[in-house]
Image (tube, one colour):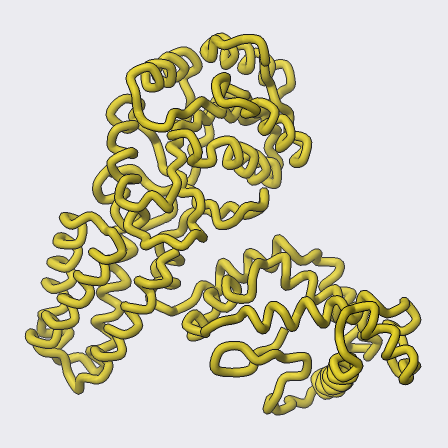
Length: 449
């Protein structure tokens, strides 16, 4: 998401940096391109108009025109205004004084409410909360079963009444069950429709009045673009929602919903869904999203991903093996698998400053799979002692992994280079990096695994 907008902003900023100093005319020229970029990204016209007016008022001033680096100051103004447009700061869930804190989900059919219910439950569970999910979608075929399956996967309790069509009753009974289990959070998965209608809204309003949720979150498919804003306005009029959840935020969308919804509806985006896995849920941080849009990366999110995906004991063990030079192909394989937990190479590189514009990474992903297959085709002894790999063993490994002997030889050579480099590190020396061992060719350069 927002890739096209990010590319356009990079081009605009490149032109701005090319000016020796900023003048009213080149600021207006840059803002004209910013305006077109936002409109092409399906951002609400009024939002774009207000945004560019604010940037222009701040940019056309004495401080900027006489600044040492006016280009950077212009970028900072755009950055600050985009952060403000997205809500300023991240908005967290409000926890109730009484237990359980009730979170009610609303939205149209197909937005991803049921999956988000499980993702949110999993997120809260990791924070030490005891969660109960209530199956309030009694109309969609298999909706209850889907929530139950997700509950089994996440080991979260699910309350359902398969023969009862009275959603208000189900939620009341679910609240009794939550008290019985000592749940600290109760998440209600409600029904959706293909479009907004009076029956849907009345049912949701009845549930709201009866169980009085602490938070009502509207789950919106980010890929529907500007329609997401209209949808949020309609639900907000009836339910007075507390926040927005954008699912499929990793999809191939123009980004208008994310950049318009807070300004138009006045409700913050609280979570974004960034993938299909249960763990693919992030708190919405406006400053981090803007940083990605402007090509500055998002190192904080990358570190958080690494901390959640990589076991601390494994990290300490790896450090010890590198220090004592006992790093083998088993450890190398484990590092490859840890990287896969962080997401695709493309999604990882977008979080690293200056790396977001790298081209097609499909060959690199393919190379990683090939390396993984080669190592998995080795015996445990061969992984620990790659020196024993002679011609016949290499032929067997190549055949088992669907690769060539030359691929096996290249991996072994790169692994030896990596061990030599690690030896220099452990000795306190700083090696040069002309060609990172185990690296792959992707985009314009060569990058490490």
